[in-house]
Image (cartoon, rainbow, N blue to C red):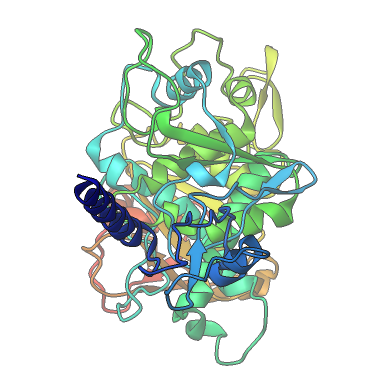
Length: 480
């Protein structure tokens, strides 16, 4: 009986040692006792050698070290806290090489419900009216470098085309006249063949100048879109997948604005990225909604807005881009008296300063005796670039000679380019204009009226600036 008991204890001890070996990798044999695996503290991005911990835990012990090879083991934390760098009142974030899919990591402040309602109301007239699909697809994307218009922004036949061409005007100003460096190769027609860096720099400069001008050169606001909505549903607001996802970024230094636009320019250019809508919202918030209402002479519950019923830009929106003020008038300064010489109850504010980019207007449906007159502040801008609106269609006239708006002798005979941004314009349109002799005028009134009816609308628009000018299309069939 005693021998049976000793055999059972021996078998039990061997089984216990086998289990301990499988658990702790300790050799089976006399003097090898089971020991616990040393616990290694977890540290963020630090590596610890197990043999160092084991030797420290086994000092003064008769136990032999485990029969395992020396190895290194690395432990990682799940996430790191975000790093925020502030320069004054502006929050800065490090740029990444790849375009961001979401602006959640950029900071800024999410838009609230009240601001979204006021923003949609001043732009569309109602928070229940969303943008059309054409507006949502419109961006500030360039033509390819191999095309005939590597300097141009692609546009389509929708309301966003007028806004894009206003930006195009400032882009040409930076591309032709405000270059960072001068080169004989890049002067004249060579300026219209930029590389990718040059046209990207010009677009960043155009966006920054327009927004900074709208904020009275003291501040501005930039809108970017994030993935999730910033507020929940409300009966006063109809979601459009854009306005409720805006993040707002305030800037009080022009250098900070430039750096931010350079890092996030893809948000205005990527396909189906709502680039024109984001720029329009940034423009309105840079001016502030209250000042836009004051410019429009609109009350809080008024239906006056920046887009008309067909979502075409109103004259107020064009003036907001070109001059920084959303006035609906084109005259210079302030009008105190009406056509009859009677004092107006309130002054009518027009264009106060000479713009960087000009504006020309012509509509064949107007009464010849009561045509819309554009003031000299827009007719003679600081740069020879004009946004045109001919019979409701937007276009762009520009010259490569900066003296055209400062030296009257250059106006005798000069060359201008006309750009529409549409795919239907298959080749550059170059116009030769001569004002010294002018076009021949018939002697009789009937022949004069017949001749005037044959004049293309674009030539009539040009003659609002240079009266009686003779325009040659140089082989291009007049299409405007």
